[in-house]
Length: 246
Length: 388
Image 1 (cartoon, chains in turn blue, red):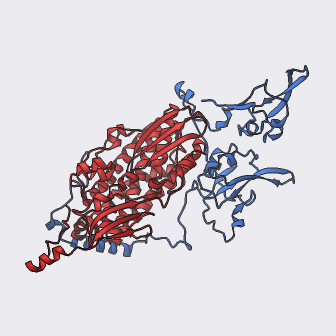
Image 2 (image 1 turned 90 degrees about the vertical axis):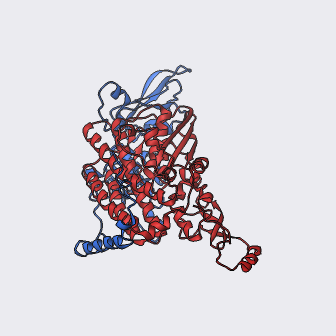
Image 3 (image 1 turned 180 degrees about the vertical axis):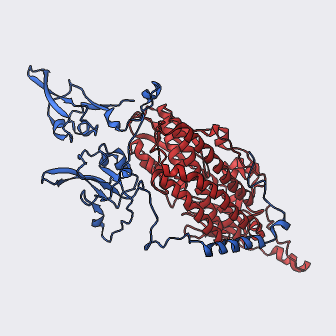
């Protein structure tokens, strides 16, 4: 394979015709642009077409969100805060609120959302006159024309699957990870049951503690669990950890 | 070629010449920057001038220091990827690629084949748009505003490809530890080859504009000269080094990702002046187009269902990892010290521009003041990565 440009240039002075050749090429382009459509877009009046996967501000589908807080923990700038808002029935639920003044538009919240409630939206005109207007609550984050292409899927393949010769993509990656409890350290405080956003934790009586009384330990429903790590963070004895499948 | 800084060249009668030789003039320090049309980014080039001739120079950086490395120590590994984008706005894809490669090496895992090919395509798109950004900046430094507009127009096509690939123009946040963020979209598969072919035609217009014009060529020739020895001692890398006659490219000589399977040439020129560095970069854009075409063919052969991202553990085992990659501006390297937690203990970035800037003194010495912007444009200054 040869060089494309270095083989042709530099040319001899006779061929380059001093500055006449570049002058000719500008005249050529000028005559072309006179008849053709301009490249420039008259921005406020006409806008460029954007694909659906364009990463503008984050969008939230309120009803699909379970309030697990994965987006708040995945956010690299810490602009997402979980706040308590009433849902359609008046019940108080946890939903993300985003301070767009700090948002880096990285799309992590949409990528790591276990229920795909968070999406990316092609909305980019977000300037405001007051800082308070940059706080986008969960209702305001709703984007009407959300299409399936705006969801970001966290699709991974397990290394063990590739080694076994079956490289299938796990669309819902959180199915493969599981929370595991160290039962001898657990004090049965029911904290994990309370904080679980999807109700995957049930407390059962299992064995006796050192005082001879029955002991409560959590049991995780792996079909319901979205692996949000909320129980891991809130456990007072730090006896829950996520077992990663690789 | 160094212009001799003597006053013998004056065309004066002998008796007057003698009096002028005794006439000692003061030299003067001039601060070019931090806000100066020639400095692309916030930095200062202190130059010492004797009349019109530059006799000494000293780059001063630090105006854009953001504490990047310290900040990286307080974040988990995936959260550093968007930060690595912001190291250099026009080479964001290569820096995220480098960071992901470093962590993968520390973890001892390999990205799937498809991810590696996609990364090669993304890297070359990044290289072309970075070189076009340089071409636009260089055009204004030479006083050629047409080049600025033309190069920026071509660059938009490549940025549109980035939007089709991952949804963002510049801060792409696309490579991930263990693969890439998403598979190539249908729009991207369709457009990348069309843009590549269109660009290969359109680039000749720009070349006609510069290379056939004796005005611009004469401004670039024989200034900012470095010998091969100087270049090696100063630690220059990238197109600035290859314009000096040192034949080394990490993509060919220490291939990472899938560059070993790609068929391309590394342009090397022996002249060592600003014009040679310009020519190396233009040829690199053509070679990048070739690599994109080959890699897209390989991605197509792998099929739509091939894996592109493997799952990685959140904690990195303790150890020291070192990784390097060919950036549009030179060799960028990362050194990771991990301590078994989900945050790095230390992450050191070796930016190519930091080293290349130190060559500014031997490059501009002997030039005229008007040549300084042209000489410094040829190392493609980007302050985000050198100050960090």
